[in-house]
Picture 1 (cartoon, rainbow, N blue to C red):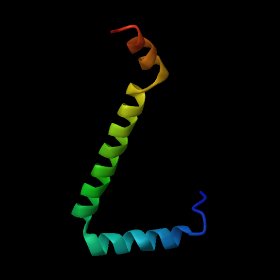
Picture 2: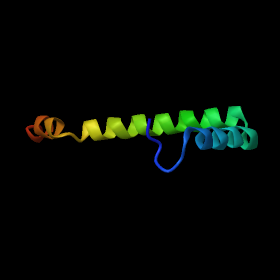
Picture 3: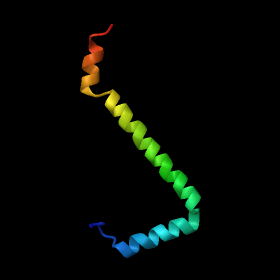
Picture 4: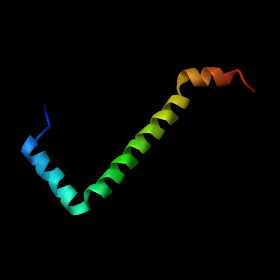
Length: 60
């Protein structure tokens, strides 16, 4: 795997520090919030797709 300038050990250390500072409960809530945000963004993009515009262009 390619992690850019960081190695696997550095990423695990950063993750460990985040869990230590914020706690696993708060990190889980943040991850759920990110997933919900991405899901709503994908839904909005799909609603505004060209196929949807073609379907709605014939309606008054």
